[in-house]
Structure formats: C-alpha cells, structure tokens
Length: 196
Length: 196
DNA sequence: GTCTATACGAAGATAGAC
DNA sequence: GTCTATCTTCGTATAGAC
Image (tube, rainbow over all chains, first blue to last red; front, side):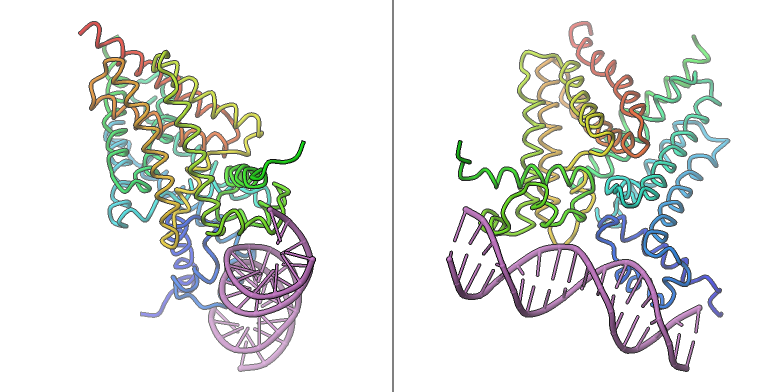
C-alpha cells in the first residue's frame, strides 16, 4: 500500500493540531511537528509555501471545521443531545490525553499576535461558526433568535473555558459542573416554545 | 523622589502580565519584558534567580490574587453585584486595550508544558481560588453547596471563555451574551432560598 | 518530493567587572 | 544592583543537489 501523495501533508497538520492542543502554538516549532509526524524535512515548504504560519492556520481551520460538523450534522437531534455530544467530545479528549490536550482554536486565539492576524482571524471564524451552528439548531427547535444567540454564546464560551480549567486543575469537575447547569437551560428553552 | 528598592521588580512583573495578556507566555521573552518595563538587564537574575519561569509564575500568582480580591472583598454585595463587577473588570480590560488583552492566567494554563508544571499549577490555583470565593459568597447568601459549586464553575468558565472569544472576534457580544444569561441564574438561586 | 547544508537571528542563562 | 560580554541552543527560512 503506497502512501498517497499528500499523506505527509495530512500527518503534519494532524501533528501540529496535537502539539498545539498540548502546549499552544508559539511553543510548537517546525522541528517539533516534523519529529512528531515523521514527515520529511523537505516537505515543509513544499506543501506549505507560506511556512509555519500557513501550516498553523490550516490546522486551526481543520479543527474548527471538524467541530462545526459535529454541531451541524445533527438535523435529527435535539439541542440537548447535540450539546451532550459536544461536551462528550471534549471530555473524551481530555481523558484520553490524561489532561494534556485542550482546544487548539482557543490556544491560537489566546496567543494572538499583531504579526499574524490571519491566525486570530481563523480562530475567530471557527468560534463564530460553532455559535452559528448551535444558534441555527436552537431556532429550528423554536427558540427565538435573540435567546438562541445568547445560549449559543454561553455554550461555546463555557465549554471552552471549562475545558481549559479542567485541564489545568486536572479534574473534570468544572466541565461536568457547567454541563449540568447548562443542560436544563437548553431543555427549558426548547420546551417553552410549545407551552407559552 | 528616589525609586524604591524593588521598583524595577514590580515593573517587570507588571510588564510580564501585560505582555502575557496580549500574546501569551511562550511568546513573551525576557528581552520583551525588559524593553517594556525599562528595567535594567542586570535585574533579571538578581530579582528572579529562578529566571524566566519564576518571573512568569509570580506574574500569574499576582494576577490570580488580584482577581480573587475582587471576588472576595465584597461581603456587603450580592452575588449578582459581584458577578457584574467581575464581568465589568474583564470588559473594561478588553475595551481599554482595543481587544488586545485577555486573561494572563488562561494564557499560561493553555500553554501548559510538561517542562514547567509550576506554571500550570499556579494557574490552577488561581482558577480554584476564584471558584472558591464565588462559591463561598453564594453559600453565604443561602445557596446550597452543590449548586453554589456548579454556578461558580459556570461563572468562571463562561467568563474566561467569553473574554477569549470576544477578543478574537473583536466584539463584546459573546461576553455580554453570557452575562445576560447567567445573571438571572444567580438571582434565582439566591431568591429561592427565601421562598422554597 | 525530499535531502543536506547553511545563513541568520533570537532566546535563556552565566561570568566577571564595576 | 547593574553592565557588558559571551556561551550555547534553538528556530525559521533558503539554496542547491539529487
């Protein structure tokens, strides 16, 4: 089975994502990515002519898109079910990595730098797309637009914050706490439209 | 007016905090801190024998303690008032910096690194102290312990997440959204104890 | 597509003078 | 308390061979 033409490229993106989740973007060097992906040195500027910045930007875009899928590909699910899936995905990532991995999008957003506005912009697009998908889902279930927007902001902000805090404190309590508190809010918002 | 003995030390810590808030810890070099604080080169290892790591650790501790004060020094305030003060402090910081400054504790937490567990631990202590202060406040106002813990986790996680997202997207909407959604939760939790 | 070599700068840390 | 080297390592990026 011969490797597809762009196998190294994919592996580099995967490795970049993994390392950024663990230690942030600034601390992730090209050497680190090469070592982790075991991609050939010569591949860097072949696949990513824009160098390190392009590689990281694409990694953020991919991560953002994959989460967006999780939130959007669920036409037959209720908002509470989608929320639980969202929380579980992060929870599993934390547990599987023994509290080493967080969110790559948040990491890049926080290391925001005037030198590389593309990275901040990519992170912002990801956040906005997640809130947009959740908001659309809630509206489809009868929640008024303004309330849908507010709840979506809460879900994304609280989960992102809780993942970071849970990781630092090495306990899932914060993430579980916010999940327990938010779940009834979503349920009530959806229920209310049928019994005003 | 002659500078106090430890003036340079304080300035270095202030500058480190400012720079970490803007670009994260990994991207903040000693040279950056020296330039920003205009402290003398020779002062680094004089005041911080532990070098860069010690400096950053102390900066995180100071930032954590100052927010803890904000949350704890409020015996005469209601939970909603304390929450509003907490949100306002972050909101003001974002606005004053034109969306350049976030939370230094979150930044250090996310750039977590197996090489410097002290930094992660310092961030974890700060988060825990904030949740502890809020939880104590809620309990003093009659909220049952488990609910107080869950609400405190939500407040800290949502505000931290929303500050990061608002900064990246360059709009205060996420922060304002979560504030509007959380405020009634706190009010209800406090009100409920008097009318069960 | 991938390799080696190298240019070039920046970073943390230490030594010793003052 | 502070300064000026200087050591050493690491990081990005490029050039040119294969």
